[in-house]
Structures are given as structure tokens and as C-alpha cells.
Image (cartoon, rainbow, N blue to C red):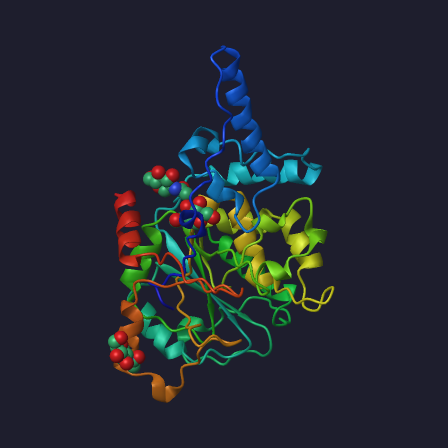
Length: 371
Ligand SMILES: *[C@@H]1O[C@H](CO)[C@@H](O)[C@H](O)[C@H]1NC(C)=O
Ligand SMILES: *[C@@H]1O[C@H](CO)[C@@H](O)[C@H](O)[C@H]1NC(C)=O
Ligand SMILES: *[C@@H]1O[C@H](CO)[C@@H](O)[C@H](O)[C@H]1NC(C)=O
């Protein structure tokens, strides 16, 4: 696992808001009302008909709109369905829970694996000496794992078959969260695969995750075929195309967000039914879109928009770069550990590598916030 990597598509920062054109104002007092209603009309208009390719959220970042920011985007332009109403109430209550509720906060390390974990001994080195500050959960979907480390013995949860790209992947993630949430001391929930290895020591990871009150969920907008091209209008009215997001699957979430994932049925069902491989001639993978879209909609400022696990997509292929045994040198690990910025690469004709985030800066920001 890599605790210092970011992909950040700063689309919203890239564009300046088009200044609404006002008619020449008349001297009569009526102009004030006209002007205000024009601004309002253009605000509403932009909300209902956002300019193509420009996400609605950038619009509301302009200073003109700031006073509206808190309530305007949340205001639907249509009546809420019963399910949406219920979902909003539950979400709001969960998000207002206090951040850390435990005296001995622990981090839950949740391994999603087909079978045995090849790096158990390495993880054991990482965990040793930190008993009481972590817990381990293993979802082995194909065969019973054999353990090389006693720390992992008996940590399997009941599992089911997982098919790559299908909703069963999300179901397995939810099963891990449900198990890990039973321990009320678990405050942060890290999803890892069998091929993840730690790149920093336990204290670093623990302090980093506990010192922030956000979740690390990768989230960006990709206007290309592997992003919005996978969106289906069957998701309407609750999920509009402009809210559709993408991101790598490996997340790390705080407790409130873990609860929220289990509480959500509305959006989960939309993705289960309409984001599937080979649906209406397109391939949609729920594990790459459901959580980024959900959190973009319900708590955009509560997520970092990047993941704490490192992966190298720079080869521009279907699969990320694989590290073979001969590649893994001290220098490589050092290189990866010191990466302090990265990009989201979109899949349209003009792949965008925009607005890298400076990681060390954001770490400080969050650590400072905690103090
Ligand atoms: C995180 O904590 C800071 C400072 O305590 C607070 O201002 C901010 O709203 C919190 N953010 C979230 C998403 O809870
Ligand atoms: C993540 O992106 C959203 C916009 O979708 C933004 O509101 C939020 O502030 C970003 N999070 C951070 C930590 O910058
Ligand atoms: C590490 O980074 C340096 C500088 O960017 C580069 O020249 C070198 O090839 C990298 N080494 C490995 C093993 O990735």
C-alpha cells in the first residue's frame, strides 16, 4: 500500500466561470429586480442545462455563486422521490456523527483476495509491535487461504464468489465493511488486494489516516469512452450524467463513510442494475464508478479524490504496470514512496493530465487541521 499518491483532475479549477451577460441597465429602480432575476435565471439555467463537458460544480465555485453554494446545488430541480428523501435524511445524520468515537481507535485492514496472501510475512513485519491499533479481515473468494503469519489465522470472513467487473466485487467490499464495523474501535477502513504491500511503516500509515477526517476515495470525471461513455440513462433521475464519476477501486474510508456505504441502497441498486459489463453494448464496471459517484453526490468535500494505494497507469494500457520480482529494488520502492504528485488520465481524444495535487502539502494541511 502506498500512502502518498494522488490523481487529481482539477477540471473545476481549470475553467473560469463565463460571466453572465447583463443587458445594459436602465436607471429606473426596476433594473435591480431585473438584474437579480437575470442572475438567478442564469444560475437556474446553468443548473438545469449545464454547459456540455463542464461539470455543474465548477459553476458554483465562482464568487458570484458562493452565497448559493451551500444550498443551491443540493436543491433538486425536480421533486425528490421517496427513496431520495429517505436517503438524504439518513446521509445527513450519518455525516453529522462525531469523527472519532473510540478511546483506542484502530484501523481495519481489509484484504480482498482470491486465496492465500503472498505477502503475509511482509505485512506481519509491518504490524508487529502495534497490537491493539489494527484489525485484519480477509475475504478470500476462491479458496481457503493458507497462512504464513499467525496474525492472519482465523481472520477470514464468510465470503462469496467475486467476478471481476461485476457487482459481486462491490458486495464483497460491503461484506468486509459490515464485518469490520462490528468492532466499534475500528475508525478507518482500508481496502487492499493480495498484491498490495506497505510502503511506509505502521506509525506513518496510522497517523496519516487517523490524522485526517476525510476518506481517500479516488474520484474524477472522465468525459471519454471509459468514463461517461459507460453511463446509462437508466440511472435517471437520481444519477445524472454530470454526476457520474470514476476512480480506482482501492479505498480507505473513515467510519462515517463506511456506515454510509452500508446504508445506501438507492444508488447501490442503480449501479447494480445499470452499471454492468456488456449492458446495452457498453461495459460498465460498478467497482470503478459506484463509490466515486456516490461520494461525489453525497459528500464531495469529505473525500480526497485520490487513493492511498499506488498504481502506475503511465503505460496507457488496459492494465496498470505490473511489477515483477526483478523490478522490485530498493530504488524503485524509494521512487514510489517519494512520488508527491500524480494525475488522472482521461480517456477522451485529448487525455488530460491536469492539476496535479501536491501531496506533501495536503498531508500537512490535514495533519494541521487535526491539531
Ligand atoms: C475536518 O475537520 C476540520 C477541522 O476540525 C473541519 O473544519 C472540517 O469541516 C472537517 N471536514 C469534514 C469533512 O468533516
Ligand atoms: C474533491 O473534489 C470535489 C469536487 O468534486 C471537491 O469539492 C472537494 O473539495 C475535493 N476534495 C479535496 C480534499 O480537495
Ligand atoms: C527512480 O527515479 C529516477 C529519477 O526519476 C529515475 O532516473 C530512475 O530510473 C528510477 N528508478 C527506478 C528503479 O524506477
